[in-house]
Length: 235
Image (tube, rainbow, N blue to C red; front, side, top):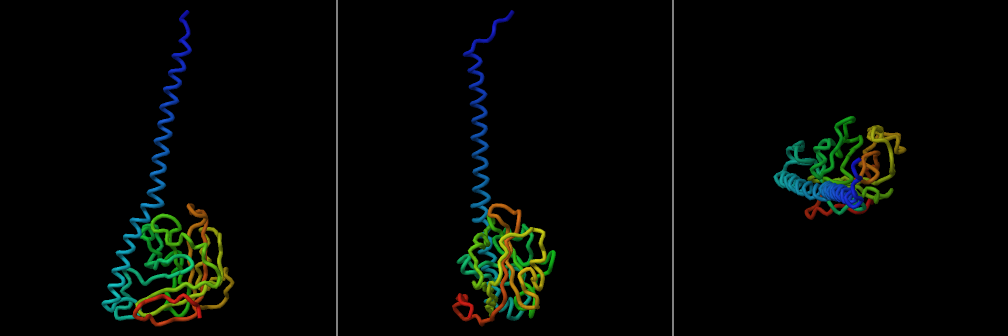
């Protein structure tokens, strides 16, 4: 009958296995940490650089007399203007066509073309409905929860400020709830045609399980002056 292996030898093998497993766990943890850094920091850096380049092109178009409110007013390929929400961010957020992930990943906000077609600010009625990322890829709507009812939401075109007042907020709804984008957003409490703006993004933070929605209504327009300082008051 063979003799059992010495206890010290068995313990040595266990120690080796434990050491290998520990190293694998440490490696997996480092990979996960690097992925989180990439997703939540580096994608923001890359997206913001791209957004800055696109924003410069839009303002160059405006300087050349193209864009909304000027000759060639429908030359909107690079963007239709800039969103300003003082209670959410100090940045001016470029708005372009479309809300597909590949478009929003460029550090911008997009207006809906599907499943409903958004109105644009200069339309005489309808819902200017926008989406942007909450985290990563610029995270332009990261602090959407800082917006309160009564806050201004301002949209900038070449010659015009469109000043909206926030009147309703829906902190959580299904990501399949497209009614919030309706031309008359009845879920917000409105029943009549008007000129609305809707901001949407993912919630809770770091997930895409639900949607956070902010509704505003146009209260006035203003001509843009030379210094292009956005209005911060509603009246």
